[in-house]
Structures are given as structure tokens and as C-alpha cells.
Length: 412
Image (tube, helix red, strand yellow):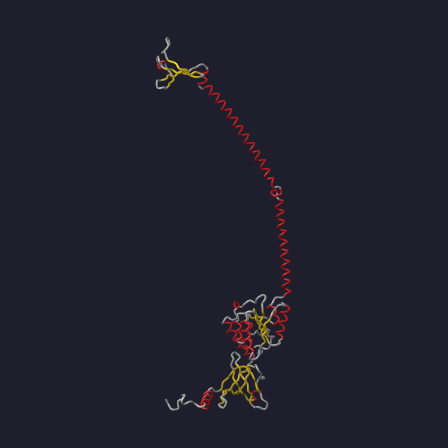
């Protein structure tokens, strides 16, 4: 380690560090820088103008100085919020330890260049899907509280609150006043946007401004603001009111309103219109109910006029008569069959009585049977079957008698 090496035992003096920093910054040379001018300080009689050049997309700034004649001869009138491109050389003042950018040239950023940059940013955000219609959140029919971001005592605030209250008197607002143009607008709008989005009572947020030039509306095409709107969980309505060239926040927001008045009409319903709608629906429903009842009454009348319902017992009476006739016919047919069969049985019984043995016996005939000692009997068919002493059983018309055979009779 050399004797001149920097260490706790061998620290640099302030002047050495300041000189080294000035040397490093000197190596940067001349640079072109773009930004927004803020805090322009032109002191009477001073030859140097002190200004602050701010980055519109980030909370960063540089102190710049310029000769008074350069500021007075600038292509545009320099004022706070003006977008410029400057050429300068960084200087580190060792005596105060401050860094400034000494300007040697100032150029205004033209409208065409601004629009071209906005168009490039639009294509970038579109490629990332921030304009996708499927991501748009619907506005609630009747929001609990409406968050309103607008300029202080602005016409846009008056238009939104007055028109919304006239349409729905019970509407409530959470108004946040911010700068709506200039270098501080984006930071303020993003801050209150996050605040309202975190409030659970706020159901919709309206970002309102009453139009303006392209330069005035630059904050509403800022990338930081566009991404903050896309990140909101609460639906956002953009009501910047600049028809020729829509700022990018119109494309990112969930709903774009042409004017602050149009935004008021979109966020709350019209009491008179809703009442008229309710009256119309009530009238139509009552009319539909009356038509339905009339139609059903007509159907019931048609059903009641039918014979089956007008005289419900007629069918039963007709069937009863038919059943009575059928029963009479069946009873008559059965009696006829019984009489015929009775007569036929009588004829058969008479024929049977005529042809049977009882009738023969009644005419004086007899049936002689030989009775064996075992008690069995058999009809005699020959005299040889009844020798003398054979027990006989003689059956006549009114009974039977017992006899003993004496053998065949003589001469027979």
C-alpha cells in the first residue's frame, strides 16, 4: 500500500474530494436533456437565470442556469410546465458542493414531437394490454361514494357535482383537488388516486378536467398516471374533455366521458328517468297481469261451456240407462237360457223315467237275483242259475222280497 493511499488514517480533505468530483463531472462534457421547466427565477439586473429542469415521468430534477439573453431569446416563452430540450454542460461548484447544468442552447419541444412521443407510448401500453376492453370494470348502478379528482374551484368540479346532484340528490362525493397541469400534476394525481382507491367507501373515481391544449393535457398522457389508473381496483372514469386528441388516460380508464357533465350522467342514474321507468314497468306489469287474468277467464269460460262441465251428470245418466238396458238384456237372456235348459232337463228326465228300470218294474215286471252265502247277488239270467234251495231276492216296483228257489218248474 502506497503512502498516499486513502484510508481512515490518511483521509482526503474536502477540497480534494470536491476537486475529484469536479474532474469526473467535467468528463461528462456537453449533453442534451429533455424535461419540464419549473421554478424559473429571473432576478432583476442579474445576468444569470436559475431554473429547475424536472423529469415528467419521475420525481427527479436538476438545477440549471442559463444566460439571461439566452432565456429571453428562447423560441418559446419559458414558463413553468413548458417542455424543452436543452444543451448544457454539467458544472460542480467546489466552493458550495453543488451541481448545476449550464445551458448553452434551448429548444422547444414541438407539438408534433409531443404527439409522436404520446403515440409511441400509446403503442407500448396497447401492446402490454392496458387498453384491453376485457379488463374494463363496470360502474356500479348506484355508487356509495364518488371519488372526484379535479382542480381546485374548477368548472369541471362544479359541472360534475351539480349535474350529479340534480340527477340523484343523495349522491356523495369525496373531492380531491390537485394540480391538473404543470410539472407537479402527475405526482399529485397519482397520490390522491391511490388514496381514493384504498378507500372502501369509494365505488367509482372520476378524473375530471375541462379540456385544454395538448401541452396542458400532457400529464394525462403520462406513463406513470396511466399505469396507476390501470392498477386501480376501483373503476375509473376519465373526463378530461378534449375531443380532437384523446389523452392516454381515456384509453386506460374503465369509462371515457366526453366532458365532466357526461361523466356525471354516467356515474349516477337520473331520478326522474328511473321513476318514469318504474312507472312504465308498473303500468306494463299491471296491463300484462290484467291480460293474463282475462285470457285465463276466457279459457275457464270455454271449459265451463263444454257439455262435460256444463251438465256433468249427463254422461253418467246416459251410461246408467245403457247399463240398465244391458242388465235387463242379460237378465232376459239368462232367464231364457234357464227356461230352455229347464224344459230340456224335464224332457230328458221324462225320457229317463220312461226308459229306466223303475218304470218297467211299475208295469209288473220284477228283477230276480240269486244271493250267494257270502251275501253277493247276481241277476238270474237262466233257470240253471237258481237250483232248488238258492236264496233269491225279488225286486218289484215298490221294494224287494226274499225267496228260496224250488228249482225249475215243471213243463217249463
